[in-house]
Image (cartoon, rainbow, N blue to C red; front, side, top):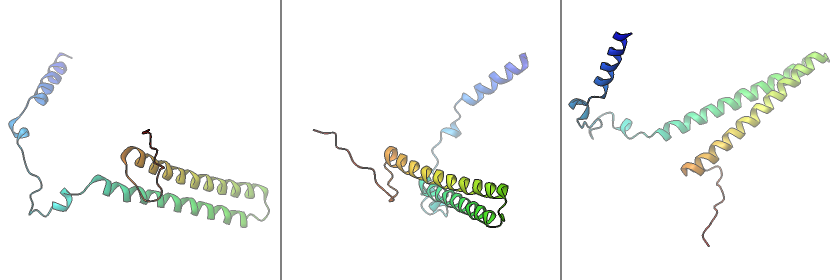
Length: 131
């Protein structure tokens, strides 16, 4: 136990000490570099298409689940258990679609309210509190 304590203390002192190499100013993005487009890349320009892709995949999955439920209903042949199973598929798909659209709406409202990012789909009403 004593060796472990000494090791942890010495390692924390090493990590907390300033090294001149780490304090040096380095330009990682020179003007003539082939990595200049990566240096000017912003996180928002990467995340927005990724979130859009996730929403599109979620909507497609819910629609396929809805079609699968309809197909099960059509091929049930009047069997009550099969019709109930198909109805549950359809209800689950509709609930999934509603949740996806609510998540999209809430995400856009939060982005616009907290960060001022307007996605172009809708805008919040402006309230003027000045007399």
